[in-house]
Image 1 (cartoon, rainbow, N blue to C red):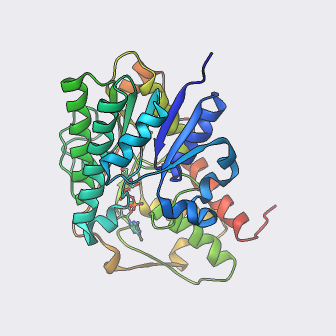
Image 2 (cartoon, rainbow, N blue to C red):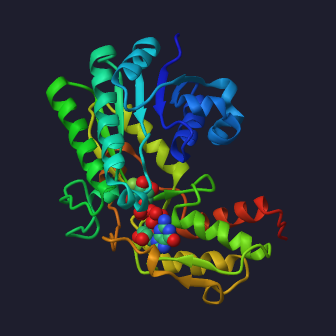
Length: 328
Ligand code: G4F
């Protein structure tokens, strides 16, 4: 039997790399779209997929270019497409609203149009975000909670979500969106607060850094473990009917709690090292996110497997190891 073919945008991101490993383990033929500059500098730009690179088929293309995406989709003729690529750092979206909106909205639109025209039987997954709820009017947030995004990033994800829904309803595409709450791992980029904290802890233990400057410590997030979450993408795509699902842990913790626990795991008191920096506050903050994954539990049989404590621990330990600190 022919192997099923999956095409992933953002394959070298945290989620893309875990998803590629997940699909390879299921014997998929895995294709990824990367920028040309990434192939020229794979050690740095393809770092997360270097161990599996020989098992992947990589294609150069740009989300901004419908024709390049159309060409790749026609060539690969995938059974499943996971659209994960985006400008995903909310903080940066305040500095450059225009490129965030352009890349994220047009990128999603171009992918959907390429699939519709070149491979209409291909099943499509869109990486939606809990940032779409923004100043949420209810806690926990469900698939029925109204969107009130608080950043260009959140707005771009609402637009991508609506485009995906419209291609499903208008053109009959098997297109689903995951409303993913924050999901972290040792592969998280250091600009996001969890990894900034755990890599900061390791640098402090290694004596390379004295303090860690953070912004709003009172923001609450529903933090899960990325490898648990990518499985939900696959479950959605392989469901008979396309639909949208909240994927979350159902627990919420503050940035302060994350920092306190991360420092404690390394035997330190966060109060001795964390400095608050007003410059790191966002012009509009999302104060509290907590997702209700009941629909995913009932209809996909999905549930998170990794607790908040285990997540913080595995991230701290990974950064300590990377800093050359062996613990007993
Ligand atoms: O780690 P963050 O930058 O993640 P954020 O903004 O919640 O977004 C992440 O999760 C979304 C899912 O809901 C994704 F869609 C999105 O792509 C991304 O992966 O910030 C978390 C919180 C914020 O409230 C921020 O204000 O941490 C607060 N924070 C406090 N100090 C900080 C810092 N965030 C960062 N990045 N750096 C700080 O120093």
